[in-house]
Figure 1 (cartoon, rainbow over the protein chains, first blue to last red):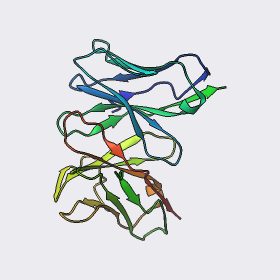
Figure 2 (cartoon, each protein chain N blue to C red):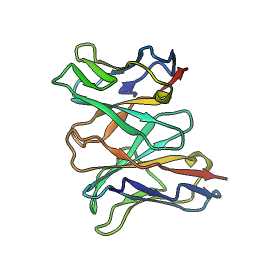
Figure 3 (cartoon, rainbow over the protein chains, first blue to last red):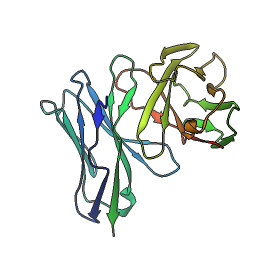
Figure 4 (tube, helix red, strand yellow):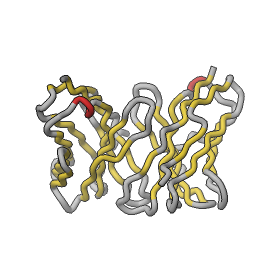
Amino acid sequence: DQQVKQNSPSLSVQEGRISILNCDYTNSMFDYFLWYKKYPAEGPTFLISISSIKDKNEDGRFTVFLNKSAKHLSLHIVPSQPGDSAVYFCAANDGNTGKLIFGQGTTLQVKP
Amino acid sequence: NAGVMQNPRHLVRRRGQEARLRCSPMKGHSHVYWYRQLPEEGLKFMVYLQKENIIDESGMPKERFSAEFPKEGPSILRIQQVVRGDSAAYFCASSPDRKNSPLHFGNGTRLTVT
């Protein structure tokens, strides 16, 4: 029972272009969503989050969009840089306990 | 400001041995979460603890796995009688409160069972 899904295992973009990573969820009770970035042999690093009362949150080159009716969120990175190459995880907060439910991850490769 | 500290970084155990993974949360954080990442998979929730209490262990295998977060000292994830299928990266995360706070992760312990 995968409550948070990232259907694209990988994405490749050219440096300077936009990267769009997608995430779908099934539980309408989720009210807080996060994106994490992970390099090999390191732990996930928090990137950006959004509350369900908003539909957009922006932080520098990173913007997260939330479409509650579609139970869909996306992360936009613009312009993409080679250092952005990593695995990106979408997560949803289980409001009851605070634990995060993670998607399977999308590997982003930004080519110079 | 030290982050979440996990040790050891790498642990090799033979089948049947015990594995003990330690996690010290960030200063001021009283909530600890353990996650497991199997090869080619995402992060799977295992257990959520506060000081001296297990709050949610819905992701823990029913046998051989246990976790604690004592009043003093780090949180411990213990795996008894390890099997090859336990080989994975185990990540600990901490947070200062439950509602809408990002979890801060350590760099994990990579367990290899031979």
